[in-house]
Structures are given as C-alpha cells and as structure tokens.
Image 1 (cartoon, rainbow, N blue to C red):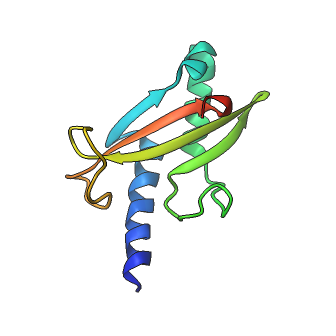
Image 2 (image 1 turned 135 degrees about the horizontal axis):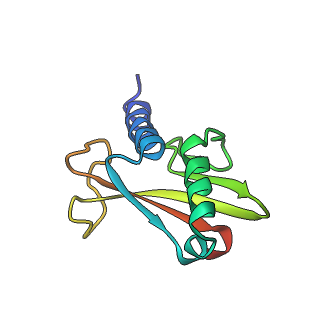
Length: 112
C-alpha cells in the first residue's frame, strides 16, 4: 500500500472514531450553533455523529475532516483540526493519538 494512502486511512479512521463517539478530542460549538438552543444543539451533534456522506466535494483529501449538512433551513459545517497535546500548534503527526488533540468545530455555514 502507498504510504500516502496508509496515512490518509489512519487519519480517516481516527477522525471517524472521534466524530462518531466524541471521545479522544474536544468538541466546540460556535455562537451561531449555541444560539439555536440546547435541543437544536443536541440534534445537530447527533447528525454530525451519524454523518457518512463524504465525497470529493466535501472531503477532497479523504480524511473525513470536514462535512456539510442541512439542519432545518440552515447549512451546518463541521471541521476537525489536529493540534499538539497542548493545543499550542498543529500536530506533527495526526496519525499518532498520543501526539494529537483533535478539535471538532461545528458551525453555521455563514460562520465559516
């Protein structure tokens, strides 16, 4: 297997695990999502956890680190970023959970 493909597969697996379980990272909701209220927040987080419609348009690098979905009449994005364990800079190796803190931000599209 190509090293690049192995790398992407490892990152994708870790991103999917984090996104679906919310374990192993930090979840951030933007002000726009928070303003929708607790019930809407719960529904949106649930939809993000269940999201599986990755394609070339929303996932060009094959890492499952970004997605877009519709919630009621609004477009919602989620984005996973990779930081070092202190979150002071980007991770040097997103395939290594001991060296990476995943941070997923859920936002309204107009907040992007």
